[in-house]
Image (tube, rainbow, N blue to C red):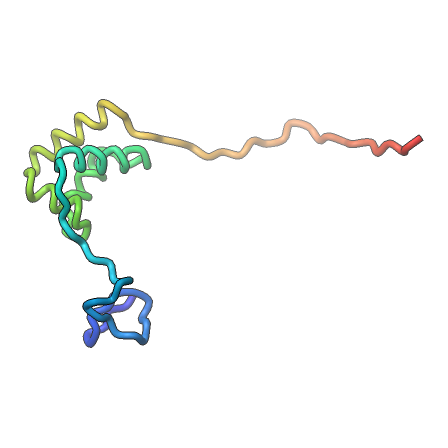
Length: 115
C-alpha cells in the first residue's frame, strides 16, 4: 500500500491521481436505520469468523474501522460491550480446526481385462 501526498490516494500506487467525482472511489456515508441492529450484525459477523469478545471489542475501539468505531462513538463503549456479551451468548463463537487424516492402509487396485 502506498500513500501519495499529491493525490491522497491509498492503494497500489496507480499513476492516475484520485479525482473527487471518480465513480470507483469508495466513499463512506451514513444511512438511516437502527444502529443497534447494525451493531448486532457486525458483532455476529465477526463471531462467526471465530473472533472472541476481546478481539471484537478492539474492532470498535480502532478508528480505522469507520462503521464499528462510529457505532461505538454514537452508542457508547458500555453499550457496545453489553451487546458483544449478549450476542456471543446468543450465537456463540464459531471455532474450527483443520486436520488431515493419515491413511490407515494402502489400497491396491487390480485392473481387469475386458472379455
